[in-house]
Every structure is written in structure tokens, then in C-alpha cells.
Amino acid sequence: MKKMKTINEKITSELIKAARKVRENAYAPYSNFAVGAAVLCEGDKIFEGCNVENVALGISICAERSAIVKAFSEGCKNIKAIAIVADSNEPAAPCGICRQVFYEFNPKMSVILANLDGKVIIRNVENLLPHAFERVRTKKES
Ligand code: THU
View 1 (tube, helix red, strand yellow):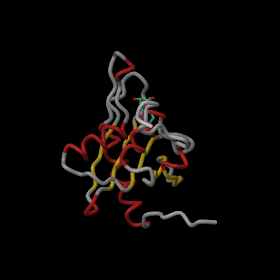
View 2 (cartoon, protein in one colour):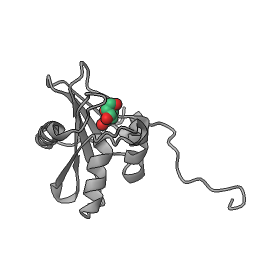
View 3 (spheres, helix red, strand yellow):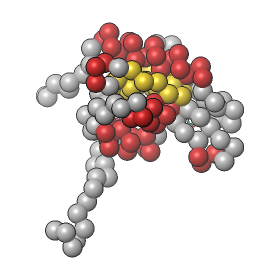
């Protein structure tokens, strides 16, 4: 079996720590479900984000996209990993929209899921989003 490339334990725990801390800034008055995320970029820089809800529920922003948008805004173009922390029984898996966003930037991105009890699951985007939507050629182009 092919060995999956994973990031090291020290960076994994730093990302989890950062996601756990930023989770405290979540604005989640409608769901009461606070989520924190931290992304690892080139030069081992870390950017954090939390979920930010809105009374128009459909426009709420997940912690993962919040962190990714922040990283990009600061000039980070190469996202290697993301950690996501929530207070759930099992580490919470990211929603489909976030998975597609991860795929856009790095299909091999490590996705570290953790809960407040310290349970951790590590996946990568290709596991989480098989047969992802990619830019397809139209019939005219092919
Ligand atoms: N949420 C995230 O921030 N990340 C996820 O992976 C799943 C869900 C947020 C969206 C919403 O603010 C709240 O959690 C409940 O769905």
C-alpha cells in the first residue's frame, strides 16, 4: 500500500492549538457551534479563522474558508495543511463547500480534524472529496 505523506507531529499539534484558540472568536449565535481552523503555508506560516454566521443563515462562513481567505489575502499561495477544531463527540468533518475549496488549492492537502477532548483524525482532500469537480473541457474545446 502507498504510504500517505503526512506532516510532522509538532506542526500538527501547533495547528490544532492555533485552531483551538481562534475557535474562541467564533461568531455562532444561531448554531451555537463554534469552529476554529488553522492553515499551514509556505515558510510554515500559520493563518487562523473561525466561523462567522449571519441571520441570513445561508451566507454564514465556515472556519475553514475564513482561514483560507485570510491566508490568501496575506499572500500565501501554497496551503499544505489545515486543522479544524470543534466541540463535538467525534472530530467534525468539513462541509462539501469547504472540501471543494481545499481541492482548488491543493488536492493533497492534509486535513487534520480534532475535538476539544484531543481526539484527532487525519485525512487528505482526495480521500474526503473523491471525483471532485475540476475545470472540464467543453465539447467544443475537445
Ligand atoms: N461549520 C464550520 O465552520 N466548519 C465546518 O466544517 C462545519 C460547520 C460551521 C458553520 C456554522 O456556522 C456552524 O458550524 C454550524 O453548522
